[in-house]
Image (cartoon, rainbow, N blue to C red; front, side):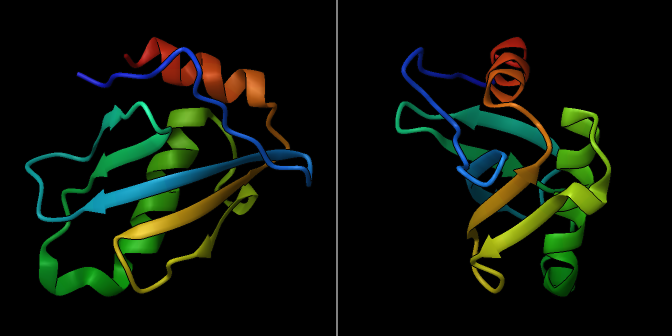
Length: 105
C-alpha cells in the first residue's frame, strides 16, 4: 500500500509538479508502490527487463492515467537511462498531485 508523508511536497515552478521517481521493472503489475518520507515516488512497472527502452513511455502512460492528464503533459526531465528519474507534470496543481497521492496511500 502506498504511503506518503504529510510533509511531502511535489513542486515545479514552471506551472505544474515535479516528482522524484524510482522505477522497478519486471513487476507483477504496474502500480504506485509507495511515496517514502523523503517524497520519492516508487513505481512498479509490469515491463520485462529486456524492454527497458520502453520504461519512460510506460511510466508516462501510467502517470497520465494516475493523474488524469494527457500524456503530452508529462516529461521525463532527468534519468532517462536510470531507474531514478525526475518527472515533470505540466498544467496540474501541486494540490491536485498531493490529493491524488494521499488517496493512493
